Image (cartoon, rainbow, N blue to C red; front, side, top):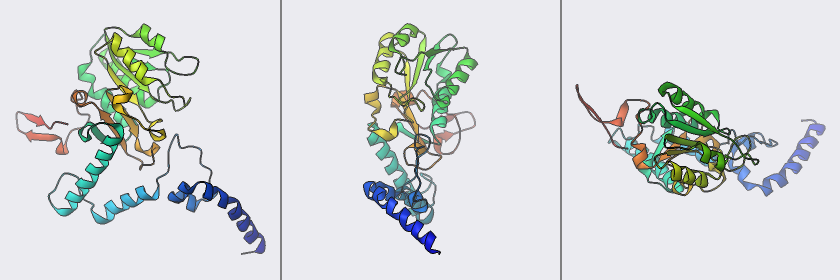
Length: 283
C-alpha cells in the first residue's frame, strides 16, 4: 500500500474512532464493520439486523432446522420452543397473551389478513374510516374490500399538525361505521397520532366499531401496549425493528381474532378434516 493510501486510511480511522466510542451500539451491527464510514438515515424504511439476530437465524439453520409444532423429535421440539419463546417475548412487550400474537410476512400481509379476514362480517352500506396519512399497506386492502362488498370509505382530514382530526372523525362516524384503521405514526410526517383518544371517541359514537392500528413506524421507538392504545388489532413489520426481512406481527384481542376468516388454508390450522366437515383450530 502506498504511503498516501496508508495516511488516508489512518485519517479515516482517526475520524471514525470517536463515532464508534460515542455509539457502541454500532459495533453490534456487522454492516458498520463492513462499511465503517456509512451514515445510514433510512431506518424508517428498513433497519439493519444486529449480530444477535443474525446469530439466532444461523443457529436455526445449523442446529435445529425443523418444522415448528409438526414433530415430536428433538429438533422439532427445540424449534417449537424457540418459536414460542419469541412469540411470548412479543406478547409481553405488547401486553397481550401469546395466543393473541400471529407471526406474518410483514405489515402488508398483516393488514390484508385483517381486512380480508373481516370481509364476511362487513356488509353493503357500512363505512370504513381511514386517515389521509395512511400508508398504502393500510389503505388499499380496505379500499378493495369496501369496493367488493359495497361499503363506503370515508377519509379523515388531517389537522394543522398532520394528525387525524378528531372533529372530522366525530362528523364522519355513525351507526354504520364498521372499521377505523389508523397509522400510529406517519411514514412521511413522523408525528404520533393520538390514537387512544381517537379510538375512544369512535367507540363512544359507534360502539360496534373495530379499531386497527398500523404501528409499523412507531414500534421501534418506545413501548407499545395494545390495551393502552385502545385498539382491537395492531400490526407491524419486523424489518423496521431490527428483525429479518419477511417477518411481521399481527396482534389482536382474542374475541376479535376469532372474527377473522383465514386468508390462506392448509397445514396445522385444522383440528379435523372429513369429507363433509372441516373443523379449524382455535387461535
